[in-house]
View 1: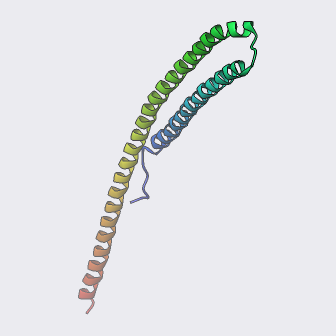
View 2: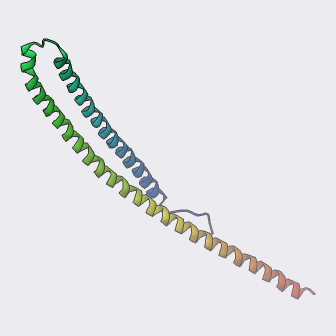
View 3: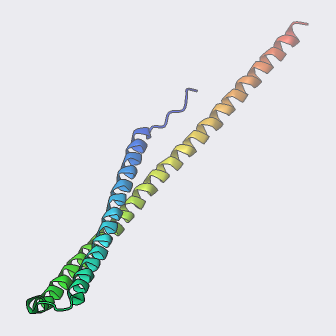
Length: 148
């Protein structure tokens, strides 16, 4: 009996690479979600700082006060766009998580198959070795009986 050779080794290697690739894509999606969350928080801080700066002035310019309403509308629109971007990023992350989990399941399945085949190979090897040892013992015993 020769050494153990798993016929699906190349397939397993490909599944492993695919699993790593999908995990990397998941990491990138999660990073995009975090970046968008940071953008939303930064946008809120910037809008609040601008409003506080304007309202903190003792005598604000009437044009600045008049522009505050359209500024707030634009800020809300920008926040809405950022929230939509966040929702898309979260959806993409969830979809990628499912893809990544499926790739990991395929890899684990083929690894289990390899482990089963290896255990079977080791069992057959041990059995063959035991048979060889018993044949050698019986041959020695038969010679000992013939050569008194």
